[in-house]
Image 1 (spheres, rainbow, N blue to C red):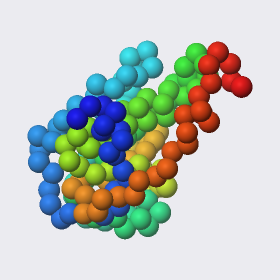
Image 2 (cartoon, helix red, strand yellow; image 1 turned 135 degrees about the vertical axis):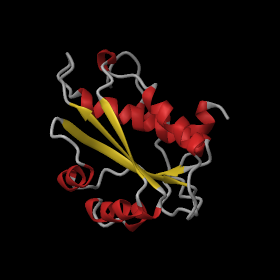
Image 3 (cartoon, rainbow, N blue to C red; image 1 turned 180 degrees about the vertical axis):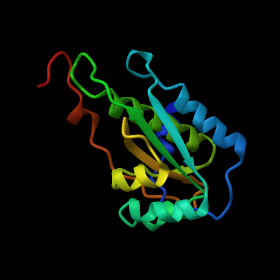
Image 4 (spheres, one colour; image 1 turned 120 degrees about the horizontal axis):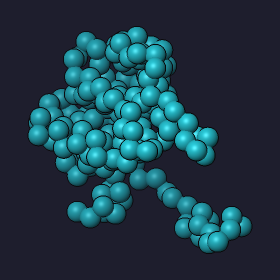
Length: 168
């Protein structure tokens, strides 16, 4: 599968089979996140793999009561230390988002499903996972074998979002 084919095939999965993820597949997903680019190559991220069933169930409430979050055999939580880039944007959000995107694409390649979760209560997640305050919890995804095909979402035509040489 090419990278573009992987991107085209990826869908948000909100139902998972009750089967564990092989360690080799999970390792490849985490390696994709580790290899992602980061501002000034600082790599300030931390990836928390939540596999404990009791903890996964507690994460449901911390994730706006989205039941499917706890249904997956694992939840990947991506945190990063804040620092401003020269453009005055927070590198934590950008770096963590890039690494999670890479992990989601590798998960797709491995036959695993994911769903980007931005609807969560940071302080609840922080307390549950004992995340130090210097780290921002940026996003998370349940990960596992899909029990559904997911929905294909329409995308805008390229002509609506691309311009050359100026914003237009």
